Image (cartoon, rainbow, N blue to C red; front, side):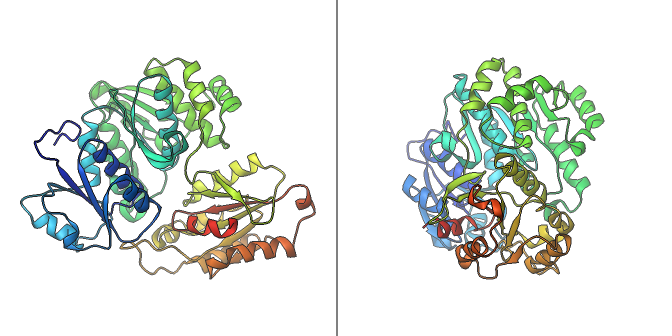
Length: 462
């Protein structure tokens, strides 16, 4: 199935089950741009579904067999969709429709480009954004698919280019990246993420190694030497590289000191982890023979991404900035809070966190209890349960609050059972217990998590 070059006398039609996800929505826009009639469904309304309707997608809320239009040739589904979903049941039973998961559809697209696939447990969205921007600045006119919305892409998660390159955020969720065919593979790190699927960290590392084996003969691997789990795979990676004729490039903040210093001077986003991400892009530029000057100019021009340390406004009636961030894993929480402390070294940091997925909280509970040390005040919201993936576990938001209070008894830590009361809760603690320096250094509020916490942010601003 060639998507971009498909030619028919009639307009082909594709239907997406679970279209509201960030990856699925980007793929839907790709099909739209290549002349397909696009329809889709999702369990609930959200920012992405409203944007897709404006883009021209025929979209239904709720899942029914009738949602699939007559004449649909291709059905693409999110792997989180249950096998009992009525639309999926209908599509799989039909001989007139090709039915494949999102990753397989995207995998076929990767075969049509010189694909630069960027993955990692953390940092892949920012690295993909910077890489795409670098190729744009170099005049290579790339197609870009990224797992967030970018200011540089006019608030979209996709750019349709006419050059030979596809810059792709390669998702490790359900090992989706094993369906992709990259010419260049970049890995930022490997962590204990998506353990509900991988079960063990060893399985996760094996999946990343298998992803690297998907790199085309004679391709290039760009890998983070500073990440211990990734670097532990070096012997196997070198064996793989020899077998497939791959070039292996390791980058490191300690080994590439001069380059890291250049990045630190110009990068507009805080955090050591983002200097590392940008260093990977510098190595990519060298691989593609793009001048360092152009790569650094691209990094310096980066305008930011949706829910990545995104400034949303000021707390109503105050000068207190309110940020929104997607961090939901302990490693991401620590790195993001450290970045905020770097950006606002003298301001008290108020972190409002919504745990995402019961299994993640259960498996990484101890790590979560250690993740908020950089925050001065912490609000924990009720657990966001993922439809079709969550069960009841002993550890929930209240258990996390108790553990945090035990670890830091002097720190204000609160469980907010009714999230809609968030503004009043923040205003109360600011009013009742203002540190001495708040008059000159106002606190910073960070709304953090991968669930629906971003929808609460508006309550702070309006």
